[in-house]
Length: 399
Image (cartoon, rainbow, N blue to C red; front, top):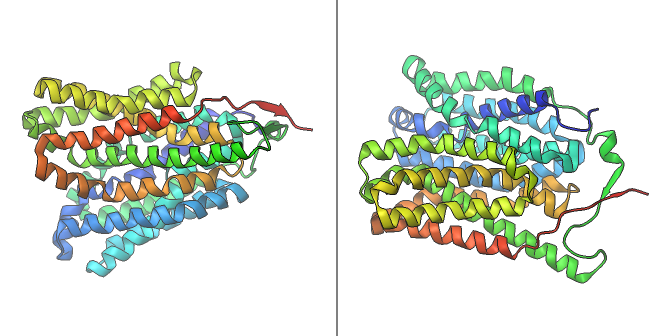
């Protein structure tokens, strides 16, 4: 087996992730309104069911990660293709709120075991410390999930209805998604990776302080991931409205929203190139600072700085998505990576579930000043990242 992730493997896993994100996380934005109208519920009810799915994904994540650590990611990812198909088919055949919620709960199981964290854990199980570039490559491809998913869902809804769209997405999981995930290698680690033993990164081995340091790093990363996912999800739901509250026109808000995707991809290309030479902590610190800087510029200059705010936010979010995969690897090593990743992401998934609602309340109450909530969280993430010791993990030849 190759000692480095191949471009073909990265492409296959990246396309599978694009399908997974486009048909779940990005689905309600386009289909919630017709779904609610047909089922006789309010649109917020659809989003509430989606939030419940995110909570389920948080609960499933650690167990899915542990399974990937033990058996490799291929079987887990193949199973999630089937789970996604079942959930989407359940949506397509739902006749009321009970069917709606049940289908989203099934999708929540798939999301907890089949989105980025599972893909990252699969790579780490296969390639260990050599996974950073592949993690970046996957996010580079799947960064277009909304670019692909939103227009495709809209097109299908217009021609075959929202039920047909859900069933078509289910069919894609049972064909394309299943094929791509089944093509993942079976082995847990490459022969080259087996020749090395990862030494703990933070402090000297066999010390009480090391345990304390790693415990602090775990809590720190959990906070950072929760804070940044809250910001990302809040902006995904409310950025156009926030910009308009700050004086931007509707046209400007829409234009800025369109800049976020390219900014994310551009930042990931930068991470794939120049920033790949620096420690992930440094790139994460830089990325965490971009949203507060953009919010400050928008607060001081108003509408003329709206585009700058959007680009900086998108760029920071693009790099932080990669950091969620690389930081636990560099700080703790590949042993037990999937389970640890699942645990670290529990607060982030919960924050993600409540972010649209909480930030919407703040936006209603404080208008454009609600940006200070996301800015404070961003600054908090920077402070916590600065407190984590930056130590490169050495590789020692195994005995």
